[in-house]
Length: 273
Image (cartoon, rainbow, N blue to C red):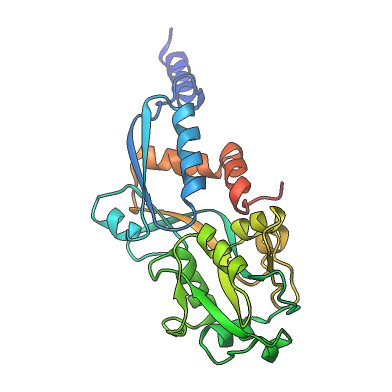
């Protein structure tokens, strides 16, 4: 075999090794994902599916409302953090959207709110539902813990960071938020912000709650995806700027068709179904 022919054969072989999945390096090792908000269920589903696809991988999902996931990544205590905003010195990969639903009791006949009215309600400037076309009842505010992604996004989008009224009751989980709103009766009527998937699930299950349109737009997956519904937050996976191959493989899986199907079960996927 002459030199030119040998060179061609070698190049073809190298190309095959690079593109043929049989020769691809199979992900292996331990991956730690940290979070503190309502995304736990979808991240655990992604983790289990990723493990099933790659038997040599173990994914540990650390979840607690008191965690600071981005700081854990910076300190090397986790490989991936779930976030709703970019962080200095970290890389972000978006895997979906979450609408922020405004939840009230089913008996509250307020037709809709504007973003400005939501801001005024949560800062305490509006105290009675009658001021926005609702019943003659006081507004009971329900807030979320200060380190949760949903609170960060809610305050940022409404430009009320650090301004939510001190009278608000802080509740951790979406499930307890739903129960509290459903169980609050006159002379008070509650309002809360919640992950849209949790709110829609509660409404579909017949719980005595409803989600208010914002700026005349219904809170639904299509309106969240295209931005017509103004209260939304990105679902981000943040990691160190140059992540190892296992982190990159998980990011790619979360954005693949199977991963997006899992995301779409709980949140709004990046692509229309």
